[in-house]
Length: 303
Image (cartoon, rainbow, N blue to C red; front, side, top):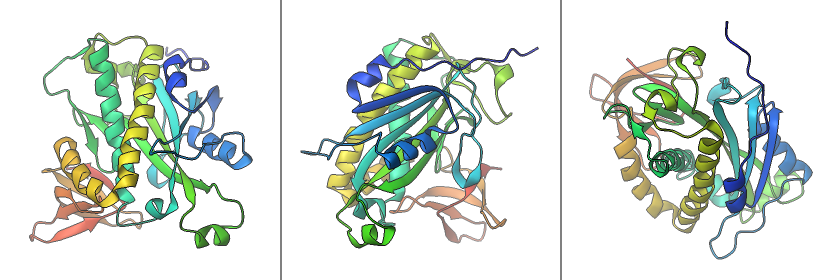
């Protein structure tokens, strides 16, 4: 019989040392929702970014009762076995709402997550069980290992920092807004606790890992620093960084070169080969007749 796990407040000393604000609770409905609520009521504030230095706040929970993914999907996690965190960053409204570049915000979150996981593994001297246990990104928001989902990401524009109505805020394109990046990672789940046959956990692929608490803190510390560094570069030069990110993502894009099926919210599907990303971070899917299609919002699975 599977024993129910009890939630406990995450201890995050390393993350607290580098983040501007850390909120840790044992349980909440969603760390993204809690971050949005606290930003809205003023209990979680982010100072102005100065000299290119971005403020990053963290909201962490050991258990989410209503974790969310893209397109209304649920994110299921286990207390004491998974990392569920949200990272709040304020960035210029003009970048957050520019559809020619804002798709890269989600890609940046994915690259930050891969960097943090790989950095933690290296720090503790852990090693993959097999040579092909590398971590990759499944466009647009999943962390994959061995073709299985190890983590998921959800970025949301939460609330303008300026006061007033939405119409007033929209009128001032120079305002900052808050983007919350929710990151859920299966770090220490055993095979019997995986939520679906398509999911996996880091400990099933890597030996020599530390405890869940140490892993969670070491990864979050690196994510704070990664978001701060990568987003500052992106804000300074969105178009230039988009091209650089396009090349970087190409090397870790799990879907590239595979036959995939894109499932759209209206119930339609499109099948073809994922051949790369466009300049705006959308996926290029080439159908059997040689036509290239642009996919901006869909769930993508390999056939």
